[in-house]
Image (cartoon, rainbow, N blue to C red; front, side):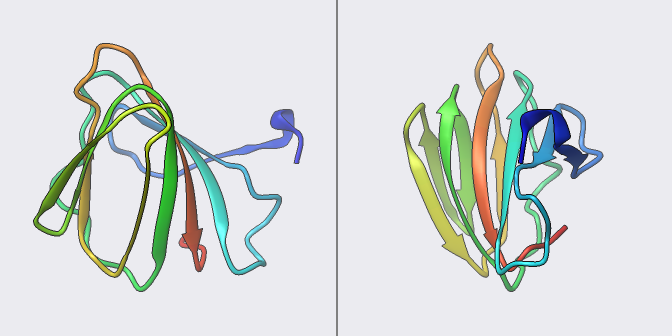
Length: 107
């Protein structure tokens, strides 16, 4: 999919913008590019879903809380989890970019 053809998706949460990198949602997973503004954070723990999430931090810092565990991830760090509540925060002064893979698609 060409960059110019991507669709904005996602949350109404302040400070988060997302776009669908997958050409469609007919397959077994979706790819998402998320950009977290400096200081942005989720509104508490997101409920557990029956899906698997994985991703890599492209730039910036992301605090990712998965269940009761907290991880501070930097550029090049990756993560993977399934069926657990999670929360996120960008503690930095620059935007954080993350590429996510979610299976099955949730959007």
